[in-house]
Picture (cartoon, rainbow, N blue to C red):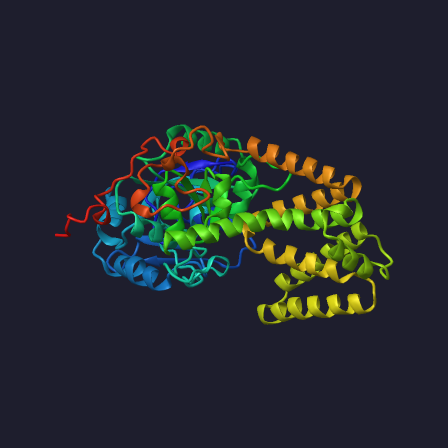
Amino acid sequence: MFKWIRRKASDDAAPPQNNPDVAPASQLSCALADNIASLDALFTDVDIMRSRRFQNASAPGLDFCIYFSDGVVDSLLINEHIIAPLLVADIDPGPGLFEAVRNCFVMTCDMKETTEMHEIVSDITYGDTLLLIEGSNRALIISSKSFMLRSITEPEGEKVLSGPREGFNEGLMANLSMIRRRLRTNELKMRFYTAGAQTNTTLCICYMDNIVNKNILNELYRRLETVNIDGVIDSNYIAENIQEGSLLGFVTTGTTERPDVVAAKLLGGRIAIVVDGSPVVLTIPYLFIENFQSNEDYYVNPYYATFSRMLRIIGFFLTMITPALYIAISAYHHEILPAPLMINITSERQSVPLSAALEAFIMLLVFDILRETGVRMPSHVGQALSIVGALVIGQAAVEAKLVASPMIIVVAFTGITNLLVPKLSAASLVARYLLLLLASSFGLLGVVCGLSILIIHVFNLQSYGVPALMPLDNLSFQEVKDTFFRAPLPKMLTRVAPLSSNRTRARTGHVGDNPSQKLK
């Protein structure tokens, strides 16, 4: 269940409000003791919930009580800016008591008043402090969040040789601040939602108001409103509930842990979804060519970036079809290979008891097991385990004549090329086994049929109403300038048409195009 949050956020996230799934309790009463009893009943067996009742020094009959959750609040702020002023202040316990406390004595920059119990529960469990006053049926919810967060470091999966080194962490406001620092304009909009009936997780929709396609933005809002789940632990909980499905594992929602990537995506007309508690930010729509793009492509020479991008595209096709081609040729189409090469392969296979197809399936499965084991083990152990395991098992299998030497080469090459495009790991895994099954059954005909199925599937992919293979209708330079190759930045004059209502990028003249033009 998603709900707008219409308030200014502070500290590490905006607290969720007005969650209709929480059963509404009775409102606050004017008796302080009754309010404390109601809160104690709501938080039975919650030992980290703390409360303190105190009086004003100049008016002993004027009682206050604060209620907060230990471990997620700033104790120094509570002591110095809430309790201390109310203890020593000269307060008139008259009809304007609540307004006087709110406007004159509580020294914090972010607070709100409420009378609803469900709103109080949602806020104080997220690090805010509740201030109750004797004789008033209104309470102040004061921002006092203080979370332990991971430091800002470079993401392990998106490291670069040149460019920014910042990466998102699990704090929502810290992540939004890194985006805001790069886009210092009022056109950057940030709208808060809550998600999850039990977790009340805060997420933020970010977009450039003068660039974004409003039809795509409205489609995102429509999909968010249809989601009803118990909890959101990571951004993938949102992605899987709102994105188009793909039976072959192709993704239609982008993910990144880098603020510079998010800023660039927003300038291109995309929308970012930042989820509290997750360092992974979603970007939509997501075009198929983005699987082969890297943020480092825009920090290096365009010719080198183009070469690297072409290697990724070639590597994706090779990791899918290499095992299938080997099986199809060695089992069905011997005449394709030169005679000396075919004789060498055949002689290697003479002492192997398994068929080529079964051998390929087993070796690929062993390789995936080693890879998965290396990922799950501690980093200093996993890397050594993956390398040593592959070498020892491969060499032992060849010496024991369980596997032919060419198969070891094919599997190793397949695994290496798979690392070139990590965003398509799931799709390449499904496609590899599908093509291998068809090749072992029908030879090259099966490979061609399998590739046709993949191509048709990719052509039918959509991301939030936008075809994933864009652009296809217009092959002008400006439409393909950042697809299979990366054009120089001064030559990128327009944005992709379906993603943005404002296609023209703001730019100045390129000095290199006119030798007579001088910098001033």
